[in-house]
Image (cartoon, rainbow, N blue to C red; front, side):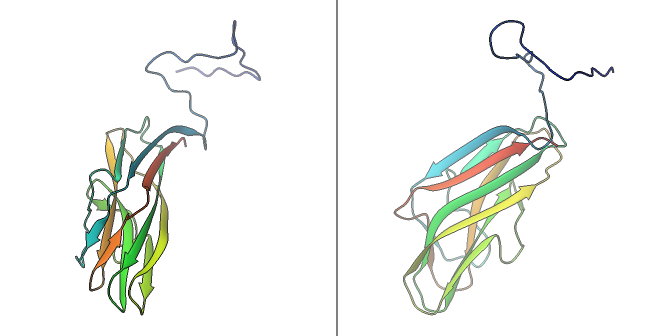
Length: 163
C-alpha cells in the first residue's frame, strides 16, 4: 500500500475526475449512495409486537465498506381507531429492530379515536458489512387498531455515509 499526498486533483480533460469501475473514492462524512422506496397502501395494525405490513415500504442497499454508516429514515401518516390507543413505528435492518425495542422510533397516543398525524423516524446504523441489507418500516399497537401509510405517499430512505 502506498500513500499519495496532494493539494489538488484535477481532471486531465473535461470537468470530471473518473474513478475506475470497482473502486470507491471515500471522503469521511460524505454520502456515497442514496436509495428510496415509496408506498401509498394503507396498512392495518392490530399486533402488539412489531410487524411489517408492506414489502414496498422497504429498501435495499449494499454498503461499499464495512466502516460505512447507514442513515435510515421514514415518513408516513398514521392514525388510531380506538380510544386510549397508540401506534409505534420503527425501522428494521433485515430481522433486527434498530429503534427502541418497545417504543420504536416514533409513537402517537390519543385519548380519542381517529387522530391522524405525520410520523417520521430516523436512525444512524452501523451494520459493519458489505452484504446487501433491507431496511423496512414495522409497526405495533399497545391495543386496539391503528393504521399507517393511508391516503398519502409513505417513504423510506437510506443513505450510505463514508467513515
